[in-house]
Image (tube, rainbow, N blue to C red; front, top):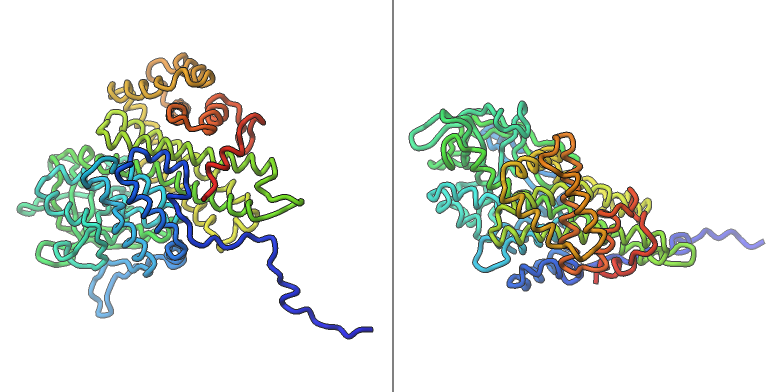
Length: 540
């Protein structure tokens, strides 16, 4: 008998039927639906092309993974016992922040030229594919610009640093820094979304104010200043609370703990106390909600685009895996049932992106009436579709989709967040009902936008007729989710139909509007063009 010979590692561990590593990606050039839908940012295409090429580099995607693997740490005191109330981040977080701010994520919408909000929204979509946590402080800095305009003196002092496209993470007074970021602290334990129940109080201190109270959630606690709400003698008022006082001392903003979140791990969220913190009043006394709603309105644009980016990242992984993996003598992507799932996911991404960027166009055009209701509809629909889409992409990879070696677990943890942030689903639905009831201009603009797609699809026209029969007057609150989902789906269909986005428009109307699709991904009629949708979605 021949002697036993132990198998070598080469013989027992041959790597076969595995896709090659992805390497550098191009999130702009490799995304045809994005390039088409971002037509409104034509003057900014060169900047977007550079952003997408840089964001997709393997080095930056690795930085995103490191920032999540090494979450922020709370530093309450220095070794001598002096209060710091700071958060320390991994170097990868700072690398991502420097990239985003340097490329203009918070500032491009406010610089000269047209298409700034569309360009900003496209950046949100692309950077969310790399590391969504760092988007939070940049989004709030972008959104704080119109809120600070309520006080020209404050705006003149702060806005230049916010738009400087310079990331300066140093903990020192903003006047000594090249750039600045802005955070937000509104929510309190007893009120949640009902900010009028806030108990934080404001007391005059010469030309400034002193705030005392507790905030349950403070986003990006290392920001250079925070927009916040407090009860002043005239009622709930908006304030700007800098990290440092005018005399160069640390402001009395006490960090109590960092929230242990499901996802969004690279970004810090804190529970804080104002212990007589120095603050500047922003806007009219007693008009705090009206002042800060400018910031909320703009953050909602980002929360409508971020889920599209998360779904795109998940779809990109699924397309990569199924193109490079074989089973039963065929590549997975060539198998009809897998193609049905992938086409459905491609449609989900393309429709969410088209809807979100149409809203961004309204921001650019100053169409406030339409933007007010459309951003709420896009936020609601895109975020409700996101978790299921990310899960279906995960399932395309099988067990490998569930492993932390790849990005899908991160995307899955992130998927619910943007629906919760800046108004959860029910809050958004109630806001839509109020807008339809109180804002005639917004209602008329929405109706006009929906009517503009009539005549392009018989199924769409029938759905519009059905809506007109069912939606007469103000619906009861219990039906708000039905109405908002229906309006948002019809609005997305209208955008796709008018853009001539085929085969997406036909498939969307059939499966999301006319009821031909099932309740799970890929439950489609055989006549729909699966390969056409996959080809449009395939990263180049």
